[in-house]
Length: 399
Ligand code: SF4
Ligand code: SF4
Image (cartoon, rainbow, N blue to C red):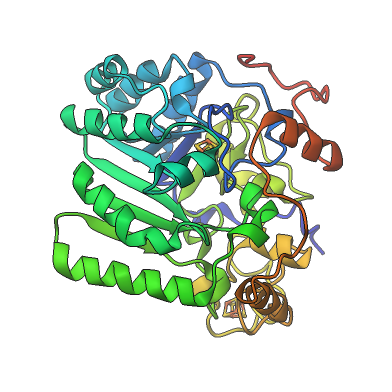
């Protein structure tokens, strides 16, 4: 019998990656309470250098990737961003910069335009200064508004992104008005997914069903009235569903992420899963990582599934849901995502939502901001690899 951790699925039915996410750094001037970076990001402080990133871009393009996101942390903290964008453009990628806006000066916008950047996604935490600045623990609201204006003046298509939760769901109409006033072509209203820092702050952030339904109705009303002026995406939080999402469109199916230190990942949060060794691009060619590594093959296909997924008629639709959510809520990444009401552990999700409805706190801990001190504290409690563990990895750029 195969070892479930090291067994590889045959490579012949694996399609090439379409989307490369280059997480250039975990450094960030903001401290968002729902940040999707690993809570122990301070363990992984090394960063690939410019030449290593260029090599990653070339290999990914050769594999077939066509869409490229530069993200972080805050990717503008890398002063080689323009060099990487220019290289990506020369390779034929469609490029997107995902930014908080901090550091996006007119000079950098000029340089990014010159380098051939296609698209910018700017994040806001809310439509009000108070909540934006509280949730990011910075005074950035006015700066973000100025940056939005400059992005449009430089002629970039702009996605405005706002993560939704209990605090700002009642402001959805104001957030849409703000996006329209700023001339955003797209507005992504992404309900919080409970991983990373959001998982720690879940009791503070999880909304009620009533809040969600009201927000969805508001979005629908706006969609009817604004037509094609701005396209609004409303990403529903799966805790409120009866079936899980088809996470990343399948493990190792279309998405390839590379973390700041060069660890290759089939989704941003997969790093938190125990028992999987994700290869580093400084040691293993990307083609080999994508097609042959045990970690990328671990949840491809259907053979890894346990019941009830294994014999379920819907397994080709949702692929059993999210592996990280299955692990976080059931302790086993190979279980059915417990958002599914066929999962024997679905009741856990029901109870979490019920507690939010009753406005009960699951714990008494105060809301935790993403910062280095908290990350170090959380890292001290967590097992796993660290950049300084003496594992012989090639050192990249130090912060
Ligand atoms: S979610 Fe906030 S803290 Fe996390 S990387 Fe983005 S801007 Fe920075
Ligand atoms: S049992 Fe598994 S495959 Fe079936 S619907 Fe639920 S999560 Fe999807």
